[in-house]
Structures are given as C-alpha cells and as structure tokens.
Amino acid sequence: MKKHRIPYSYCILRYIHDPGAGEALNVGALAFAPTEQWVDCRIEQRYSRLSSTFRDFNGHHYRAATRRTMAAIAALQSRWRDSFSLGDDFPKSLEHLCRFLFPDPGLSLQCGATFSGLTHDLNAALMDIFERMVTSQHSEGVEARRNDAQVWAVFQEPFERAGVLQMLQPKRFDSKDFSIEFDYAWKNTEWHVLQPVSMDYRQNDSLQKAATIWLGNATALKDQEEIGELDLLLGPPQSSAQRLAYARAKDLLRKMPVPHRLIEEDEAGDFANECAAMMREHRENDDG
Figure 1 (cartoon, rainbow, N blue to C red):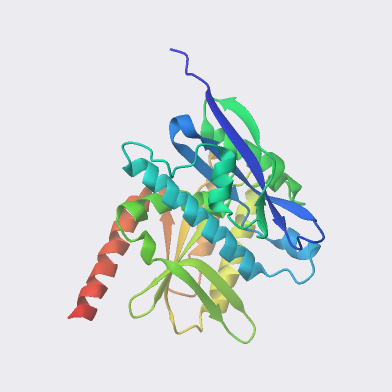
Figure 2: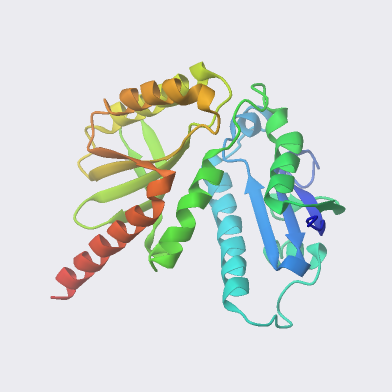
C-alpha cells in the first residue's frame, strides 16, 4: 500500500542582531503539520558564524533564547500527545504558531516567510530543510549528519516519560582561564551534567576531533569541585563505515580526567529511569 504524502508548512528561523539594521542569518527551521498534530523545530546551537558576523554578539543570551523556543515546542508537543481533541488555543496555521512562539516581533529570533510542501516523512523533510538552509552555510558545510540538539531529542522523551525533564537546568562552570555552560544538569550533593554529543559525521577524522574537544573540556573541568559526573549522551554514526572510528573516539573520551559516563542512544530509557530514581532518593533524603 502506497504511503500517503502529508501536507506541511515551514519557515526559516532567523537571528536578527539589531532590528534597526535588519541584517539576519538563518539559524533554524520550524515545520508544522496540523493534520498529523505534529510540530518540530531544529535550531543551530553553534554560534561561531553569528559571533564572527555581529559585533557584541552574546552567546549566552542566544543559547537561552533557543532553549526557551525548544521548551515551548516540547510543551506544545506534549499537550498534543496528551489531548484527545484540540482546543481553540492550539495553533491552526504556521503563522498562528509563530505568533504563539514569538509573541514579541522585536525578539532576536524571528520567523521568515511561510512555505509549504508534501512529504512521506516529516522528520526527514525538516532535516533536509535545516541542512539546506542553515548548516550548509557553515564553512564546514554539512559534514555532520546530526547536531547535538537532535541527539538530545532522543534522550529528552525518556526524561519526560520519567517525569523529571523539568528538573534539569542550565549550569555554568567558571575558572580563571575557562568557562563552559551546560544546558542540562541536576544536583544532589554535586552536579551531574548531561551533554549530548553528536558523533554522526561523514568523515572519520571528524569523530576524533569531536572526541578531542570533549577531552579538552573535561581536562579544564577537572579542578571544579562542584562537578560530580559528566555524562556524555552519544549520538553514534549512522553509517557502518565509521564504526571503527567511533570506537577509537570513545577510547579517547574514556580518558577524560573527571568522573564520567558514555551513554548510547539505545540506553536512553534506562539512563533516564536511573537518573529519576537518584533524583527521587535525593528529594526523600532532603525531606527526611
């Protein structure tokens, strides 16, 4: 039986540094298929292109804005999953959705023009739009098949099912020579930080580079007394051609000089349940 094609609409999310100047760069893609009760978004987490283009660019504010947008979309997705019927407060069009997500037209993240299409696979269509309109604009092109945000999406759902997604919060570690912020962390006595890391690259040396970056970050973090464990949530390569390079990259990551774990995507459910149990135990001990 031939699979039917699904109508959808989409727009490009643009970062506007100064509304008065009107200069903008593409940073994301938002897609909407109301007949399927489906909405999703991809937003670029790297901001090197933005910081090199706009003077006084604030990476912290940009990451905060993208987190708020993704959280609003996740909340909408959850309401759709949990609702048997759609109420009047649900968006009826992409334009309505954009007004819901970005009520202030003066925000730095803004929706572009609306386009439409037909597809058999909504997720694949969104990914294609994101690669063509956003990641292809980087000097390294579309070397990465998936970014860290897409890897996090695999882990986010199990944490939501476990009822502890809302307990994750950003955490920043600062020292004299180094500063790094994690989007997802939780604390018992010490901080447990969760970092999605895409290893889904087309070239073997890119896997080694990604591992080397996190080996360096972990080395800089080793004197941080607050950190209890660094959990890298790994998105493995989709191609078997990178299997050996992936194994070697993980060998590098195992040398990180801080307490750490490497969590694979197929372990996401068990890992979320384990974290939830630890969080509940910590709350019970605090209450006691």
